[in-house]
Length: 65
Image 1 (cartoon, rainbow, N blue to C red):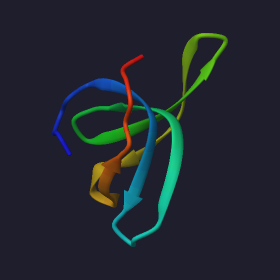
Image 2 (cartoon, rainbow, N blue to C red):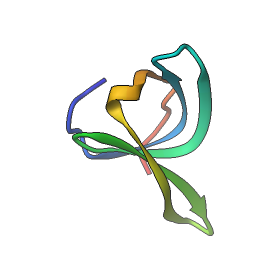
Image 3 (cartoon, helix red, strand yellow):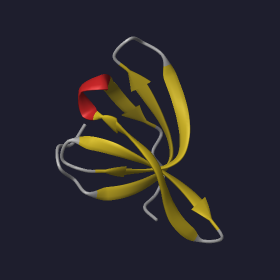
C-alpha cells in the first residue's frame, strides 16, 4: 500500500489485518487513512474512514475518479 498517495480509486476490495475483506465502490487514499466514498449522481460523497493500521491489502482497484 502506498503511503500518502492522496488519490481516489474505484471498485476496490480491502483486506483487513484480521483476514476479512470488504468491497467498496470508491476509496480515497490519504497519508494515514482510507476514506470510504460513494459515487452519487456523478459526485464523490465521503461516507467514513478506516485507519491504514487496520488494512493489510488493497486489491482490484480499477481506475481513478
